[in-house]
Image 1 (cartoon, rainbow, N blue to C red):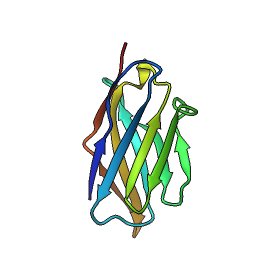
Image 2: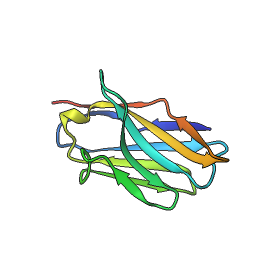
Image 3: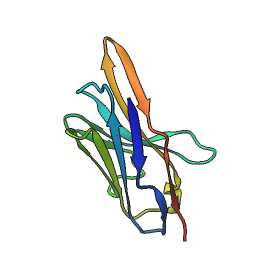
Length: 118
């Protein structure tokens, strides 16, 4: 399984970015795709997740500012980020996970840098 992220970059506070992540390979149809982020000196944290059925969840810090969506036919997940803040600066990682025979399968992208700066 390979995950390829795109869409990161430098943006001013209050600006917007849209991250994309395309997954390829042998992906179990019932899965969760999500975005995590890791800022310097901090642990990786979940930003948002979406199941193959369309249920979503968000970190409190991004609720109302970010929207996660997916295209199951393309195995692609998106993260629309609006009203970006300095504290959103981090490397953003795409993840796909599923349970099979009682075991969790996890795959990660290489990460894309998001920098919010004036």
